[in-house]
Length: 425
Image: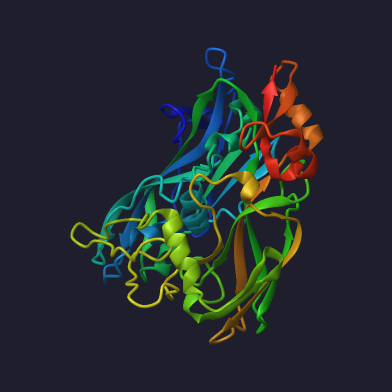
């Protein structure tokens, strides 16, 4: 939100016009569905661009009578099984298999919001028997705050008409993964809104697509991340993508097959990464790209999170040795800097081979990778999106550094032209 005025909000309602949906957590996953209806078409002749979808989740956490374990804020997203956003025009923008509660919070929200969280971290839930009311805010992003033009990823609100936004509340026992015997309970409610900014020009955006790739961990050291740059549920996007991040999820909260401390070397030749044994170098560079300690600063009312704690580590970790610590949530093989330009990112389409060596090679579970891929809509979809405005318009390319000269365009058109385009009426 660096380049604009104040965020404005559009309420999104459940069926029947309800502002929130009440749920009693039980033995199964339960949905709360909202539909974007009749969104703002314009504001004083300008264009409202959707920056983020925000979900507010209120839920009770009941610690067992025998006492459980203290529950830190970074573990609370497990009370949500997943999110799903399906647009009739744009397709599956936030797919449920990728947007689990934990990945949504610690990857999609954290990276897209500019290496920060939407709501900060509440204090720990005490281990002692008792009920605690928890309020969480989850950001489902369109805009990318780490880029020099974050709103160039934000669709016009009119393109989101009839979009279904679903929150799946996890089974009541899901929280027991962090405190044995704990359960979630009523009162539990979900509400939803869209954050937007008003732009004097209509941007036909690039789309930042987060996607989860999984492969069996069966004793090998090379994993093939299959199908990067394919549509992955989006409606009419061009083949290939610019790769904004490549994260290998670890077994600390995000379900990977190993932990960062067990990886002893990596090579990704297709991205120009030669054999590298200093795995902690990726964490060191990532910390500086983030701008230092960007995660939570407190664990409880009296216990601060160490400067080396917090993202990309669990809040309760104490990282005193190498930065490729076993409490890391993910290994940041690729990530963006601040004020990132789209054209500086590598283009990729196809299967990506990632080879690591391990101190102990996993033989079960799954290798899990999450990418953030920048996509360009197909030409037919662009025409359909312009037609939705009800006005005749044409597209004008946006360039990262003004308008390049003709020789640059002839020699390197894909390097100088950004994926978003401006609609000129």
